[in-house]
Length: 390
Image (cartoon, rainbow, N blue to C red; front, side, top):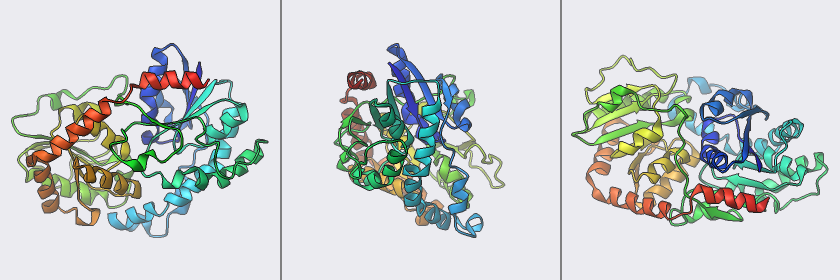
């Protein structure tokens, strides 16, 4: 097969596709990953072939942000960004999808099937225009906003532009296969899209990914904790307040801790860094989680899924709407404890982390879900199922 993967210009949207593309390559299929140019180096870093195509919508977000956003605190900034969820989804199904579809149809790569991350809808339109199957891949939690009956009427403008028949109920949107990488035991909320099947999803690693030697030599005589809050959170105004509170909290807990402060973050922060806390700008998250006793996270689906696959209990500090959804599902299963963003001061974070580390119920529940994840068919079976569609 010739498989075209499509993604938005954001790391979190690309990462769910990577293990699938690697599995396709192992089986001898031809693979390309289409995204705007900003993502080309990262795609190549995973050992995949980048194809520059797709609508780069990132700078349009700035026109949607309310005045004063840059000077707001973290809670206000997170609320403002959360409010963009519905307008962004409508844009993704509207002019962004139409622009991406035009790009994809103009490339020299002629696929037999298009595999898209869930929020990228230009791949769906292009596949429909080509008369080939299309597959969606779960890339975030909370699916009410991407149900077929919600997106169908918006996508019809793109279908009309491409000479396709109307589909106002969105029957074609998930007409072939939607791949979910958490088992049904995790949450019924992630099983609501038509033709959903569950698979076991490896954690994505860069081709040359490795841990820094200094991290390999850390003292592990105490519980080991990793903390990281994802790309979007670090770009929110006021995020330094959360980072600094986390540093202080980690220093108050009997543990050895690594905190990723983001690629643009500062490891020299102007406040005392406790001796048990080690700051890094970036770390290969999938690798460091393998040695963790607990994970402090913003609640993004990719991050939580990586921890779930490894049976690592979590402390969630959700910032955006989908983060809160994910944190709620995980807390209901007993694999995570949630601290609301408004309550995320150092004492509250320290108390929450201490609970996760000392209450064996979190680890037991995390290991139970891990076994359910391992009971799913591997991603190679997903490639077989895609081949059957073709």
